[in-house]
Picture 1 (cartoon, rainbow, N blue to C red):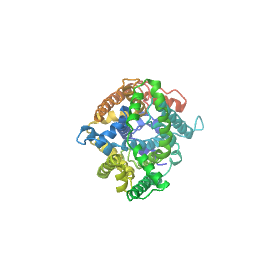
Picture 2 (cartoon, rainbow, N blue to C red):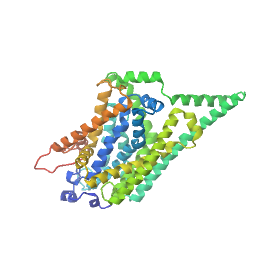
Picture 3 (cartoon, rainbow, N blue to C red):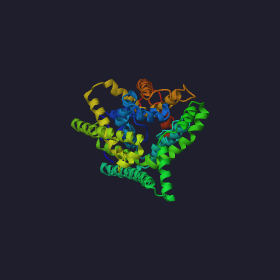
Picture 4 (tube, one colour):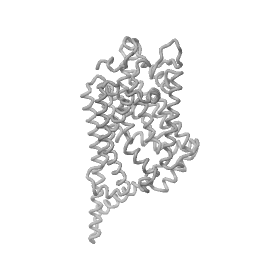
Length: 461
């Protein structure tokens, strides 16, 4: 493995260099830029999650189909073009980097659990917390379960070179592209058969049973692409119910999402970014080791390519939502094929911008606040589930489906401000976030010290 001292901030403690027993990372050994970027990604994830916390997806559908000269549409355009999937992608990158960081101060001593055991124990508990997030906190978009399972594949690559890690990332990206291309062509084939059947009907020819079935299959598929207003009403009514009612309603949704998304897309989506994050960590990108000119170039490339591609992909979403048939008729490849290109460049652009701001010493208070959010990102992630479900669901304040699309982002800003302040205050008194403390105590199977005292070394996440 690459010399770990190259990745530690200047002033790292001697305790880190000579530690012989496995323990959590010390605060003096933390890499501030990683915490800052993780904090940005954690706050940014809520931009994408809030529409699904706050109401039925028909809200976004109606915004796409409605007047484009509105705050609702402008908000959707900015969020989908500039942030969609990029914050999750950045979070996945940092998860890969974080796995290496977790292993860096662990040594085999022959006493107690080994490094591999700690690693997999940590991930198994993460899977457990993902189940809690989905089935107790009732957030169907949970990512912890997926990260916990996929993270188990990273350990054999902990000593791999950046080159091999990049190759692995490309392999999973190609799998993602291939699957998208196959699914799109399969659906497009149904459209072609439908158009041919309609053409024959107009010419007065009698359709074969196969042609009739093809026509009906396309019409059914086209119908399912548009929200069923009666189902929407039922969903809204159920989500405004009490906790047992919402739990029962979301139970099949959670089960289907955790299994379906992991099997169909998440394994390619997340592993692509996790492997890339491991490579970038070893190359020094996340650890503030590159030159300022390199970060500036990566910012220009990231935004210069990512923003136009994001806008193009958003236009494709608008067309597919408005007229799916015309979309298939016009394009042989789905705009979704641009997904990895867009989120890769935008994620790198976001991270590069933040590092450049940090180096310029502009708004040091904000950089410190973001680092605090990132240091207890696990707590803040679960806190977002708690805050949003209590605010929107029926067993809480019951604001489900009551806001216009752009108005739900006022809630996002309020949560951001709260988490920035909360994280700073909490870490002034405590070593870990509350959920980090539970996670680490379970991982090491030993109660971790929590409160900060003047006579002890302060621990980090």
